[in-house]
Image (cartoon, rainbow, N blue to C red; front, side, top):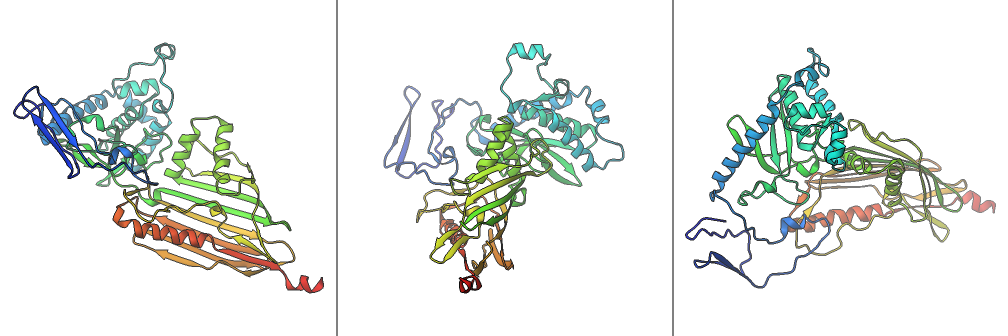
Length: 471
């Protein structure tokens, strides 16, 4: 970066002890020597490599003081946002068709959110050519008014329109500019706004900040895209742009519920129905993926999700028409399934009562860990399985119940015989934290190893004694 005695200054960032860097007065050049640098280690569930790999940034900058740089850039960004939001011709008229005078502030924000979410989201479609834009009579977007006129815009343009409309409804609203943590994090000492990727809206309701993201397609009200959660960036305040942070994700915002009702025939084949229900982030991600394909492609996406849990030669068929468009409702899919299930063990059958964990592999196999564990979001799963065994067979034993509790995780399984020929199991797991240091690896691995061991516990069924005597 320009600056220092000869206009060159090298900033060092988390370099190992075996590294040295020097600046040279002649020629305005930098010499960087590094020795004993270990190879980069790829591990499962690790942070994006950009967050971990050593790197050197070279760039030109007038402000060499960190606080001065962000103050100046924040001022430019804040001005740009305000000019865009302030171009609100037609916003009041549109607002009058959306909200009622008797609505509470939260009802107004919720209705505005639904309206903005319904507009065309150009961040999720291929970029149009100039000819296409001309045919569709699309204007160059310079403010909230042209987003309205075009009936759509990019992620940030939609969120800016949302802020403009919320303000027009008399409710305080602002923006926060953050990085995309799917590939990087904000480094304050790196003096570049290029590391900031997206703008998120913040509405003030009942004295509290509510972070909202109608610009992320299929994002339900109250959530923001996981990529922009729990990260630092620049935020608008009454004093101008200052450092701010989005809230971390919560496990209640990504929920998966699975239900299986199957009957076994005399050959150990399971036939029945399976239902999947996704809420919050879990639904949003699948809707976004489904939005990239056609009806047949969406059907395959859901069937493949069930298929990866069951034996390879299973027959799976989607039996309902899921609602792919309404982000405020759970995404529900129902299936007819048929698969080999019972494993013969002499005169007994072994049944893995956790039907959806048949193909699950150990999450962590290595004894040690070099990098942090990085789950995109905390999550919650609830599974319920009902198994009907064939006539002439009886339950000999069920898998044991168990509960495993940690400060950041819970696992609970329950099993019971709900009728002479019916077995019931319930499995709940909550992981309430997304990032763990290598020092925490042993405990995290221990938790998931115990979960895997419990999931693999079978029930035993056998030919009933009455049938055996009769024969």
